[in-house]
Amino acid sequence: QASAEAPPADRPLGAQPRHGMIIDTPDGPKFEWEVDEETLRAAQAATAEAAARSRAKQDARESARREAAERERRAAEEERAACERARLERERAEAEAEAAARTVVAEWQPAASAPALVSLARRAEVDVLRLWLEAGCDPDALVPEHKGSDDFVHCDDWTPLSAAAAAGQLSTAALLLEYGADPNFVCCSSSFDGPRRFYSALDCARTGEALPFVLVVDGREVPSGSDEERRLACAKHPLVERALLQAGGQPAAVLPRPSMSARGQPCARGQRQNPCLDKDGVPLSRVPASATSRPLPPPPPPPPSPHGPAAAAFAGGDGELLAVLEAIEERLASCGAGYVARRKLMRGLLLEWHPDKKPEKAELATRVFQWLQEVKWQEPAA
Image 1: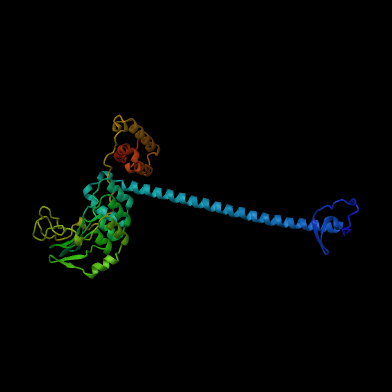
Image 2 (image 1 turned 45 degrees about the vertical axis):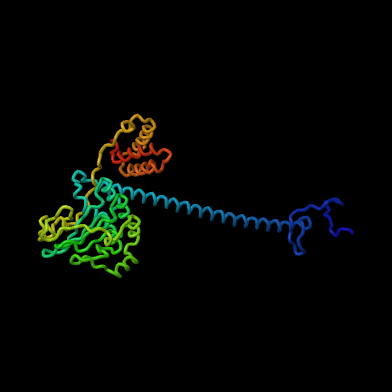
C-alpha cells in the first residue's frame, strides 16, 4: 500500500522523513517540513514567546526566593545583634551590681548581715545573696521583726529561708538550701509573755505568712483541724513547698519547739532570747530603732582570703598535678581582670574538675577541686 504522505521536493525518493518541531495547525499537528514558511515562522515565534514567558516566571520565582532568603538573613542578623546587645547589657548590669555591692567591703561586719540576708531572700536578689553566702554568712540567721506600739510589742522571727518561702521566691529558697539552710528551723511569733505560735519554712510556703498549723494559746496546743487539711491540699506557693519537702522540710507541728524567755524571767542557758524583753525579762517600752528600720542590703562581705596558694607549693612535687594547676592558672590569667568573666570561668572549672565528673582520676580531680576552692576569691594580678 502506498504511503499517503507526499515527500517534499528536496527529499530523494525513498529517504526517511526528517523529524523536527511539531506544529499545531487547523488540520492537526504537523511536522515543520509539512507546512509552509509563514506557518512555520508563526509557530516558531509562538514557541519563543512561550519560552520567554516561562523564563520570566522562573526568573520572578527565583528573584522572590532570593528576596525572601535575604529578608530571613537580615532578620536573623538583627535577632543575633539584639541578643548580643541584651547579653552585653545583662553583663554590664551584673558587673555594676556586683561593683556596687562591693563598695563598702571594709565596713562589713558579720553580725550586721542577718537583716540583709532576709531582705535579699524576700526580693530574690540571687546574685548578691550568693556573694554573702559564699563569704560565710549564716544561712539560718534569725531576724526578729517587731510590730506594735509603746504599750504592746509583737514580734515575728524570720530566717532567710522562711522569708523566701513566705514570699514564694523559689530561686532564693533553692540557693539557701544549696548553702545548707535548715528547712526545719522553727521560728517563733512572740510577745511579752513568751512564744505565741511556731512555724517553719514549710508552713510559710503553704500560708504565705508567718502562720503555723498548730497554735499555742496559754501554753496549750490548739490544732487547726480542717484548716490544716485545706492548706496541705492547696499551698499558696506549691513550687517552694515541693522544694522544701524534697529537702526534708516539715511543719512546725511535728518539730521540737525552741524554749524562749518570758516576762520577768532572765534568759537562761539554752533558751532563745525573747525579742520583746530585755536581758532581765523586762518588757521593752518601745521597739528598738534597729529592729524596725529596713535599710537596703549592705554590700557583700570581703573574700575570706585575698590570695590563694601557689600552684607549685600546693602540688608538693606532684608533676601531673602541677601541670594541671599551671594550665588552669594560664586560663585564669587569660580571662583578664574582669570580675564577671573570672567568676564564670571559675564556675566552669569547678564543674569540670568536680571528682564526680572524673571518676577515672578521682584523686587528681579532688586535689584540683580543693585548690580551686582555695583560689576562687583570689584577685587577678594587676
